[in-house]
Amino acid sequence: MSDSSERTRTEAVAPGDPAVDAAAENRSRLARTWYRSRFGVGVIAADVLLTVGLAAGALLVTDGPFPGFAGLGSGVVPPFVPLFSLLGALGFVFTALVERFDASVGTLVRYNLRLPAALPLGVGVYLLSDILLGGTTGDAPLVAGVVFLSGLYVNLAYKRLGALARRLLPASADRSAGSGDGES
Image 1: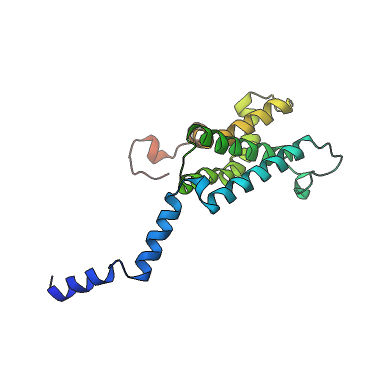
Image 2: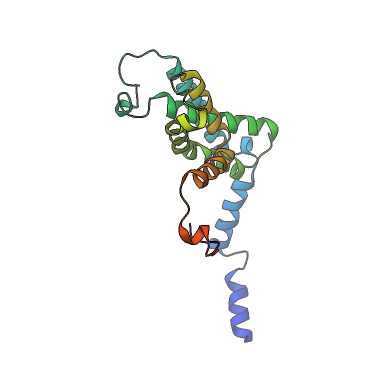
C-alpha cells in the first residue's frame, strides 16, 4: 500500500469530517439511556398509549367488527388475536425495562421489534390452536391466553412453532435419506 493511499484513508476518517461526526453522534444517540433521550421517551410514550388503547379495546363489547380491525370481525381470525398478540409483546417490553431499567435506546428499539413480529405469530398460533391445544379452540380465554403468551415470548414461540413445523411437514426424500444438503 502506498503512502498516499494510506494518507487519503486516514484523512477520510479524520475527526473533523462531518460524515464521521454524524455517524458517531447517531451511534451515541442509540447508546444513550432511554430515559435521557427524547427518542427513547417517545418510544415508551407510544408504547404506553398503544397499551392503554389495546387494553381499552379488549374491554369493549361490540356487536360488530372490532374497531380498527373492520375486516377481521367476520373473518377467519377473530379480533382478539392481534389485540392479545400486541399486548403480550408490549408486556415483554415493559418487563424487560423493569429488569434492565438503564437500557439504551438501541436496546429499547430492539425490544419494540417484537411488536410487529408478534402479529403474524399470534395469527399462526391461533390457526394452529386445534393442534397446539388439543381441540379446545372453543375455549376462547385459553386460546387468548396462549396468543398473549406467544406475544410475550416471541423468540421461544418461533422456535417451538419451527419444531412443530418440522414434525408436521413431510420431509423430502433427500432429507430423509440423510443427504445433508442443507436445503429446507
